[in-house]
Length: 549
Image 1 (cartoon, rainbow, N blue to C red):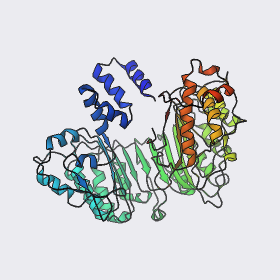
Image 2: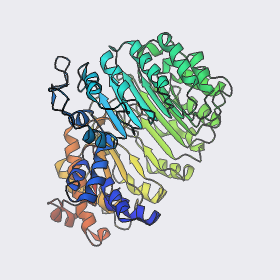
Image 3: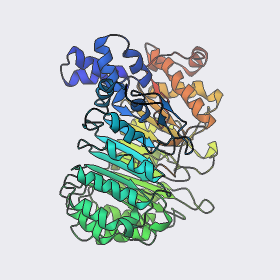
Image 4: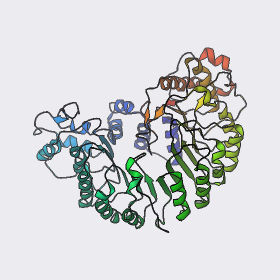
């Protein structure tokens, strides 16, 4: 959504005052724009600074408010304060610290000296929470010192906690954090844990902690943490709605099987498994999950077209008749896997309430116009369809879907679709003049993944997309990382040459939307008129990690 569209939408919802309008404008600015806005005037400054500081990807900006920081963040040269904090401006620090709502830190990208927080608290004039209004923390740790450095940041305001412990991190660092949560009386609404500790070493502490988490609504755990005691504790939580797996392919997961007793999760709306298809099928056959609305399955598949995927889907639609979302992460043997055929997904056509379909496979799913017609007939409320593959190596352009297939999506779905993700075969001969075709007025995101586009394809591709999609379309390109992306489908390797070409394509689309009558152009006219790129804001470009604005 563009800044202007977001502002218009907000104004439509309610009458806004001047400050409210400023907040809406700043909210839709990139970080560089917020920094520039902070220097305009006092009213802009307060709002823009709040927007800059509410979501931090590093703790270093806060520490630098107190004193210069030395080091490179590497294990031999961790970040540390340069000199004493006796003259630190604590008033300034606290004024910015109270703006922070979300913080991310990972020692993979930098470590802090062991004494940095003890030095901070030694000179701090009061004992108030360091970040009193923080609600969300994402913390990654390879080392014990880094893991426990989260403790001074934990406050009662925290509602979402995501922890990622690497192999080197000892188990007692996790149990220390659990104790810190209990001691501070923090009741989380979301807990996401990615770890490699043996379940027997954390079972007592984690189980005891979960019994008291009456506000917990969403939890992500390694699949091998499905012990009887942990599942029993989860089953007592009155607000729990979502249970999902975290670690994608953990060697130690194979020995642990989830056994869900009848009526274990009475309020569960979303459920995930990291299991082979046989085990996953067994779980859905033996457990009453009729209230489930979204299923996320991570599973190895040797040959999706002939293996148990189709039988699993048959079991799934029977066990969960009111499905609204299906997410499948299929990691296959690279020497034997075959692309999924749409016929394999036929059982899902029974899910009349389906709104989200996401499939991450090694090879692209190729759709026909008949497939899209069947999808539209079966799923009239479909909003997001992401079939972008997760290739190990570069895919040949010839194996993709024709770009003109978007015309069939437009004529079949109309206004419901907001996101489409496909691997495309960009062929100039296939890119037709789409005057008179239906549009995709609600489409705000097009995921092209690692689809190949050449320099010569940029102008006709931009003309085609600009004619069928509304202004404000976000194009996402690149390759996702299987080692990092489980629920965060936004993590990608964006060094592929095709990413830069897709960025140019998205920018060139602005020429189409700049025309007074964008549906009256001809491709040959666009070829000559669109050699220049208008630096406008009617269409935005983002890499999938959201950092390419």
